[in-house]
Length: 162
Image 1 (cartoon, rainbow, N blue to C red):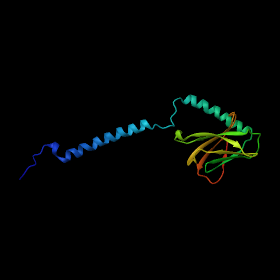
Image 2 (cartoon, rainbow, N blue to C red):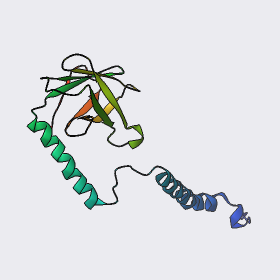
Image 3 (cartoon, rainbow, N blue to C red):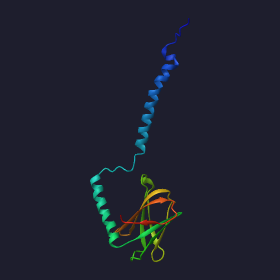
Image 4 (cartoon, rainbow, N blue to C red):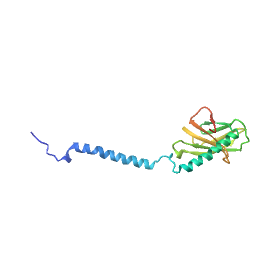
């Protein structure tokens, strides 16, 4: 009867068993490095300051309600068409802010020019896809309307102040 006289470090089984925790540790370090490089944009440092800012923004939505503003938006390719139901003596430009729910790097803002009595048109830098938050305001930021968009859309989305 022959016995295997190789030392343990020349055997296959100990190295297979040792490799499992070593690979797990390497993957854990890799995951931590990835999380440090791509931290989420949703975390806010100063909750109190953010809360006060939210209350100030809510007053702007109330102002839109007091002015009886009602509008809808249609994204057609790389154009945004904002249509107000009434011509409430609005200025020649309105401001559009597009916010991606999770990727702040994709957020963008632009101005829409008046094109008729109650229609505003803006050329988008990209044709947005997926879910977006939209905030529409006047140049002086006295009022705001908002909507959640699921793009691409084939119908108009109502802008509201709630």
